[in-house]
Length: 238
Image (cartoon, rainbow, N blue to C red; front, side, top):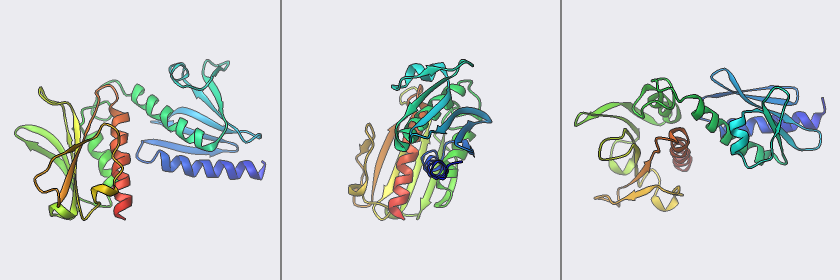
C-alpha cells in the first residue's frame, strides 16, 4: 500500500483517538480503512482515498438526513460521502458517533448513556476521565436526592475541583455543577462554553461555580460538552 496513505491513516487514527477520548468506542485500522465501533457494532468506516480525500461509509439513513454533507446510498442500504480534509473527517466522525451512540441507547437501563445521570454508567464514565486527579468519587444523598460527587486535586475551596452530577427534580432540570478553585485554574483563563451559567459564590476570590444544564433529549451530547470542559481544566492545571 502507498506509504503516503499509511502515513495519513496513522495520523488520522491518532487524531480520532484524541477527539473521541471518553466516548466508549473502539478504533481499528486495516489497510486504508479505519473502523469506528460502538458496543461491538460498526458505526462507520473511514476510507483514506488516493486523491487526499476521505470517504465515510456505513452511515445510517437517519444520519444521512441529518448531516450537511451530500450522501449517496450504497447497495446494502447504508450511506457514504466524501470529505476533503482530515480535520473535516475528525469533526464529522465525532458528530456521527455521538448521534448514533445516543440513538442506540434509547432503552433506559443502568448501563447506557440514556440512563439517569445518577447511574453507574455516568459514575464510571466520569471516573474514567478524572481518575488521575480525583481522590473521591461516589454517590451521595442530599436531602434524600441521589447525586454523584467527584473531589479532585486538593481539599480546600481554593485548591480543589468538585463535580456534582445532579438528576432532575420537580423544580430543577438535570445539571452538572462544577466548583473550581482559583489555585486550580483562575476563571479568566477558562473558555466558558455557550449556555453555561456562572453562579455567584460567597467567596469568589477562592472559587467559582459553573452550571451545565443537561437536556433530556441530548444527554450524551451535553455531557460530552461537560467532559470537554473538564479535560480543558485538567490541561490548564497541568
